Length: 159
Image 1: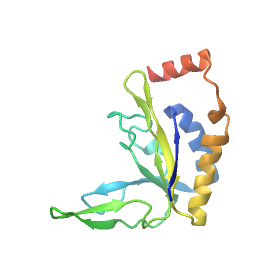
Image 2: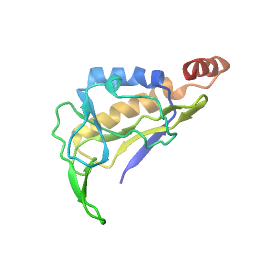
Image 3: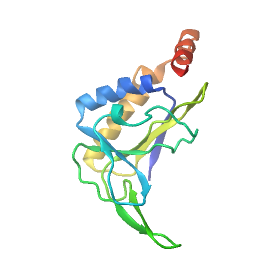
């Protein structure tokens, strides 16, 4: 069973944790979803993700990534389509890893929720999940009470 953890954060908020996680664990981000070809898109840092922390459509699922051990083999799953043709799924069904949807800024005043989680129980995936939980749930970031100054800083970043 997949347990997803939702959070609200700007690019700057996420950068603090992802830098710490990336320093302690050899991870990379693989674009997850259904694709017309079996090509794999992977980057070693969140900084290389196009529009990281921006949701142009306002859809939480606009950007999905599988967070995996750096260099891990990724197997796209061939999925025949009812109306013909095939698509290739890149997700955690055949690949160790945790789903990460960063969410982020949408328009001039909205932050779209991000989320992370996995149904997998393998040791490497659980290590990544634990690191994300440590930052996004147990860090100072997760325990902030929105003060007027915090709201002001968020507004500045949203501008």
